Amino acid sequence: MPTDRAQFREELLDRAVSVLLAGGFLVVLILAWQLITTLELLPAYLVPTPAATAHAIWKDLTDPRFWNDQLFQTLYVVLVGFAIAAVAGLVIGPLLILHPLIERSVYPFVVAFQTMPKIAMAPLILVWLGYGHTSKFVITALVAFFPVVVNVIAGLKAGDERQLILMRALRASWWTRMTKVRIPNALPYIFAGLDIAVVFAVIGAIVAEFLGSPNGLGSLVIIRQTNVDIPGLFSVLFFLAVMGSTLHLIITGLARKFTFWSQTADNKVAKR
Amino acid sequence: MTSLVSVNGVSKTYETRRGEKVLAIGEVNLHLAEEEFVSLIGPSGCGKSTLLHVAAGLLKPTTGEVLVRGENRPIRAEEFGMVFQDAVLFPWLTIRQNIEMPAEVLRIPKAVYKPRATELIELVGLAGFGDMYPRELSGGMQQRAAIARSLIHDPELLLMDEPFGAVDAITRENLNIELQRIRRVARKTVLFVTHSISEAVFLSNRVVIMSARPSKVRAVIDIDLPADRGPALIESPEFDVFVRRVHRELGHHAH
Image (tube, rainbow over all chains, first blue to last red; front, side, top):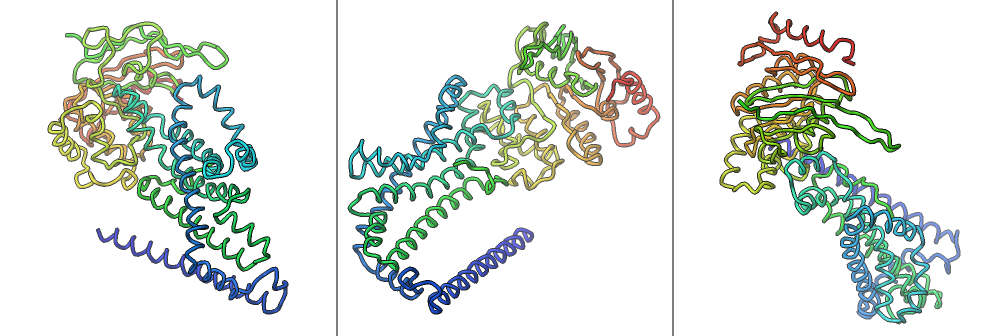
């Protein structure tokens, strides 16, 4: 339809403007940064020049050991930890509200646990599970799990109550109500939870690697800090930002595909 | 002749959180003959919706019983369709998928419901909108889809809970005329909850006037107007006579 095409063109234009604005801001930032370094407003050993940082990024980018021993190691931990958190959240969430008795007895502990900084448990988990991949997976999964489970529960309770009355009028089974009403209603929430979880997973993996890992970006941060390699640190931060953004974009892309119908999908209140 | 649905001495008591008992409906008798259109009208919170839910078997009455074709049993899913104040469509399904949904849940063969959905989409005036999503349609059009959905499994009875309460006055009048036509074509029995006197008179064979809580049937008015009703009827003096009678019976309770 012509209106569709006009709307599509308008959206495209709108997106182009957004990209231009963001790109413009980036240029301003880099210029300001360059100015700070050339005018030596901050000492060079604290803030490297944009050129030095770009050089450090390029060096890492072209170094196969950086990819294999550091970035892919961290990505591996992030993805496995996130996968564990996502599956656990998607399975445990529905179980928690299966019966009011379970919900009322167990859910308060979920909430209480959720308010605790899970990162603080990382040393304990290292003591329990020792160094190695298992402890890193567990720390990452633990940090990423709660946003998933809390959103799964909120999502399963969301939606118009009358949609369920309608299903009861049709004498629909528990399974039918779940698959036809509750799960579709929950999807925008679930994706909001997964989006937070994937970013949290990066935090979890980095902290796990801080605590004594022979490889991964987290350990590289510690090594470069010890060597006072500030451009190198900037480079790691850059790659972490790229990793986080890419994972976030993948999740929001999937969310848009599966929850296109939800007008409020973008502003669902997701809890950490 | 046995009624399609008989509500015999039904009352419903709710318990509030503080444990107080509230009598929502007190002893209601109501008989719906086949292909009859009955409106329930009364003050807000007088338990009209509760009565509708009891008739649908969604709520158990505290006392009394609901008979379906003379048998003391809950009404079966295949026997009735429901329409709410808002369309309550599923936003992730297209209009056609929404309309087909009850048939799918009731495991009606595709060969039966697919052509039926196409017919219903035409009947409610949504031809060409079947592949759109609910949010792309106006409230009035969504409500038409909800009516089509309530008819997909070809039930004898329609339970309508203020179905046009959320649309504007002009749309409402059009939808009333449409519903009148659809009902005559589809030959359905309708139990219709409304707050609008003229809507009740326009659509009904009988208007049941309920009192405030605990609600009872205050009066039943037979609407002796021709079966085939068009927009012209609304301006006729006969129509006014019935509107005034319902109004008088509602009295000062109608707030």
